[in-house]
Length: 274
Ligand SMILES: NC(=O)c1ccc[n+]([C@@H]2O[C@H](COP(=O)([O-])OP(=O)(O)OC[C@H]3O[C@@H](n4cnc5c(N)ncnc54)[C@H](O)[C@@H]3O)[C@@H](O)[C@H]2O)c1
Image (cartoon, rainbow, N blue to C red; front, side):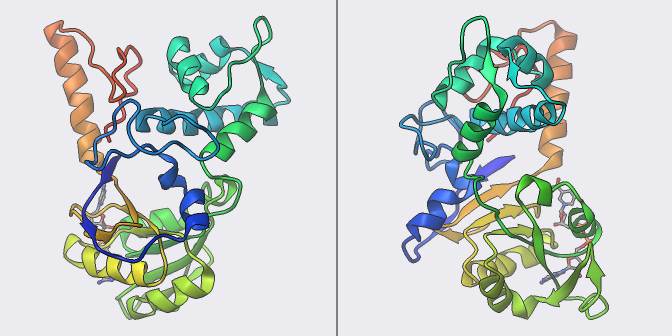
């Protein structure tokens, strides 16, 4: 996933919303590239957190939540790192960013660590999501049941196709593109997901911003221009496939492992390109 920086001038951020938003918890360096120690510290901590570490924190949270559901109260760094597919040195470093060092011989208290990661990721409140473009991808996103439980309820859907307007998808009726600003403002949508053709993405983005949306997840293969207070992340599965291809090519050539974007040797193949 790529943090994207196309900026337009715009109004100043609302501090309380900006501080809460998931994607604004990540480190920024103004170039779209993550780097160790760059940019803003995640909320609740004094240290900047590399964007790749933020992505791994989300993975640790998912693993810890599953462990908690199974009744675990403590977890060692070795157990957690194995379950998350990350080496334990990297895990300990990631958790040090949020001030969590564990107890020698005991490890980490699961619920305490969950709380710390949730606070760092701004997940102590729900972030309502709107999806725009209810085609193949939009349908899949709208129907996916895994978002609400992780604090991201899908509360609005938009499209331009008259055949879709008013039709419920995943229990939410599709509204018309023109209603984006009003509906997003009324429903307090904080994250907009763009799944339209690329030609439509910028105008959709402008409407989302007009509706007060401060975080955009963009699946369309286009760079969006946004005001300073709006955070954009771009998802491109082709890039992920190219990264896999890179690893296969390296392995076949017998060349050394790559380094992650936070500058660490990567023995885990969990490169996050940002
Ligand atoms: N990032 C990725 O990894 C990835 C993967 C698949 C698709 N995509 C991209 O996601 C987008 C959607 O792909 P898809 O396969 O679902 O396409 P699709 O054609 O099935 O769906 C697009 C939907 O957008 C709607 N739409 C068109 N113009 C609109 C507008 N102005 N406002 C609102 N809705 C509008 C259409 O009516 C349609 O329902 C494309 O840009 C595609 O390139 C990205």
